[in-house]
Image (cartoon, rainbow, N blue to C red):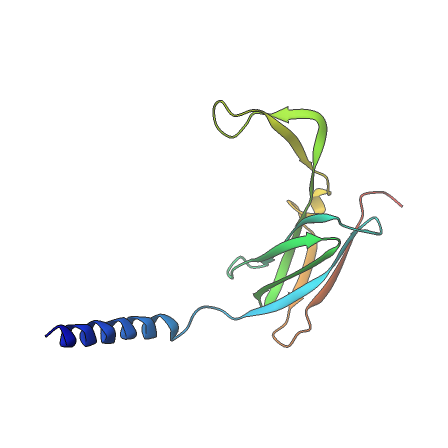
Length: 141
């Protein structure tokens, strides 16, 4: 009787596992990569988000390190958001919970046209190669 129960449990487990891996798992993601410069120099570190321009599809995001990024996102027209923060020398803000020590204050140092009011766009294609370069400017020429 224990043998029958064992095989029944094994069959049920196999059925559950098979069910977890099949069927549609969501939209297909495509690799995107590229470079980000600020005033001609690679952006040391920051974040980049590819938001669906129509607000219907999921967003893709990644880290920018030494001016380069690489992640996956769904195909389509994207609004691109790039952020980078730095500590404000000599300024602190309250810690996250009561009693925690103050932490250094940070500021977003890229212009709003690259983040909260982005004007940057990209078209992610199913056929690739989805390589983008964003040349940001903080100084007037």
